[in-house]
Amino acid sequence: MRRPKSSIYAQIFGTPFWIFVVVAIATGWATWELKGPDQVRAALESDIHIFLFLIPRMAGGMILAGLLYTVLPPQLVSRWVGERSGLRGIVIASIVGALTPGGPMTSFPIVVAFYMSGADRGALVAYLTGWSLLGFQRLLVWELPLLGPQITFYRVLAVLLLPVLAGLIARRLPIGTGGASGPGAVSGEGR
Amino acid sequence: MPPMFDVSILIIWSLVGVLLVVALRKKDGSARRGLRRGVESFLINGPRVVVALLSAGFLAFLLPKELIATWLGNEAGFQGILIGCLVGPFFPGGPLVIFPVTVVLLKAGAGLPAVVAFLTAASTWGLHRILVFEIPMMGAQFAAIRFVSSLLLPPISGLVAAILVRYWGMPAVGG
Image (tube, rainbow over all chains, first blue to last red; front, side, top):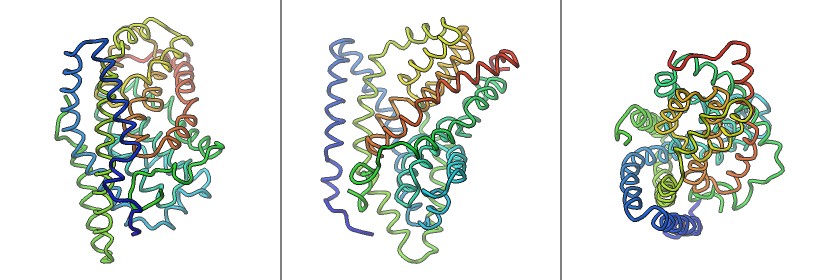
């Protein structure tokens, strides 16, 4: 593994971090002005619960992705879901996305791991779309019990092919992902 | 408030265990490198996500959600689909919020095509997820590519749902 170009401290408190700090202060100030200090406190209190929920899952997701990156053979990844994987690669990515359990704290680290291992952006977009529209865990745990089998069936039919469509569009978009604009938040690679 | 421990956390950490065993059996330092990489990216992304979540928490208080829901419930047909597409992104895409809201919408008489478009928009154009996870971890350019690629998805899903309802009838909520 290559050593990071900058120290971990510099990466933690880099520009992206400060942009988010500015946005947080601005929205916090707007809430204070428009809704009053009580709402600011209520927002912060609900954030604490979300952090407690998120942190063990996010740590798990990141470590999962780190191990996945060292275990996955890059040749295999680029053959199955790389730039020349065609429609098959996008279909596979959509299905794997739908099978990925958990929230964004698992799926996004996995996307970073696959990107580093040579998956193309069409496959990554298909993966994320498959996960967010057809994720089986959310379907079984939330949608079926709350909305019932009929509405779930209609909705699944209505979105079934969309991950593949989004992947095909992403592959053709004339916007680059290269250089410093790729997923830069993983140390030792890119940037 | 979401529960601290549930099936999802069990699945995530079980998968970590399985991958750790696979990496250890390779006996080439993969396990150590993978763990190190995971911990480093947690240290780098964690603070960004925490600060982004603060903003998202405030935004949730600033949005007139009840008003939006009433609005969606009152519109049918293509207008309903359009409104579903436009309001979806402002709701957090996570199941804890989105499915209870959906039940309320359906019971309030919102059409299924509008609700399907709303759910697709919340999932694929969801500003909360883009702000909190996608931009901090994947960068703004990837987020832009995925967003543009998904532009057509909510209206398409609403139109397909409208066709299904037209031929098969409106399904029952909870049925």
